[in-house]
Structure formats: C-alpha cells, structure tokens
Image (cartoon, rainbow, N blue to C red):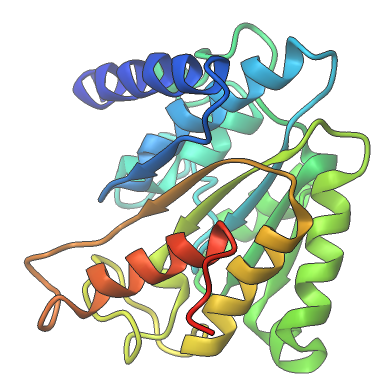
Length: 236
C-alpha cells in the first residue's frame, strides 16, 4: 500500500501542475488505484474555482472496497472508496481532509461485477450507478445523457476514470480482470464521444491495460482510439 500511495502522490502533484497550467492531463496506467491521485488533483484544482468536482467512473467493478471489506486485498478495488471517504487512509487525503468527491456528483457506468459486501457499500454511499442491465434497457446514449447531467450539475466540470475492463473481453482482451457482457466497440466510443461533446471534462484516466495479456496490441490501440474520441477526434 505504501508504494502505491507514493505513486499516487506523485501523480497527484503532476496532474495538479498540469491542470494549473491550463492543460487536460491524461493518465495512462495499469492499476486503477492511480485514480486516487488523479481525481484528487482535479478536485483540488476545481475547488480553487469555488466549485466541487464531478466524477464519471466507467468500470465493470465498483472499486469501493476498503481494506476491511475486501476479500482479495487488491488495492485497485479501493480507489473510489478513498475518493468518497477515508479508507484506505493512505489513498484518501491527497485532496485534503474532506473527500475528493461527493456521492451526489459521482456516477458509475457499466457496472456488472460486485460481490455482496460491495453491493451494500455502493448502496449506502448513494452514488448513482448505471449497470450493464441499465445500458441494455435504456441504451448507452440515454445512460450517458443522465450521467453527464449528474456529474455536471453544480460542479466545475468532471473527471473521467475509464477502466478498459468495462468493455467486453472480445473488444478489450488485455485487462487483468475481464468480465463478460461489457460495452461493445461502438458503445465504448459513444461514451467518449458524448463526453467530448459536453466540453466539461477536466481530466482523464485510461487504466487496466495489461500488455502481457493483450492480443496483438488490440487493447492498447483501442485505448488510444478512446482517448482521441474523448477529445472530439473521431474516426469519421
């Protein structure tokens, strides 16, 4: 945990410096725990403008476990808990004593793999959750319209933390924790295209790409496409 916290602290400092210079930082990484640093930086930056930060967390998983609730002990299953609260303590205070983000400004998209204890934690946190079932029923465009509205209302913009395992393994095979039934190629792009159209993204994470598990660099190249889409640079 201490080594991960050091990396997140460095990311926090680098991301905040980038934001202060007027840039839009993009964090490309493997472990989603890096979001503890990048989101905190965006939060501090936006708070200086007198506004809270919105957060769109695109992921197959909730990432809201604590050291006490986690069955695996994997830190990449805890960063959102740290951003919303106080645990794990090593990752929770980059933005100061107050949580980096508030539940009412936080939206999870693409969720489909939570253990029973984490389901209880997510419900208690009162964040907005759009599962893959919601996407199937409503369509990705409707889900994203709602997510963007929640993350934008009363905020100074939103950070996007995009875990490639939100996509179906047939689209993004090179992830550490693949889960069947995820976003299609087009759904994944629509998420980013609508984010770009909103003009309110402060910063971006693209995470959980594992080159050792990838197939002919498919996932890494897909991640590059998604990053371009997030900035309005579409294929067509």
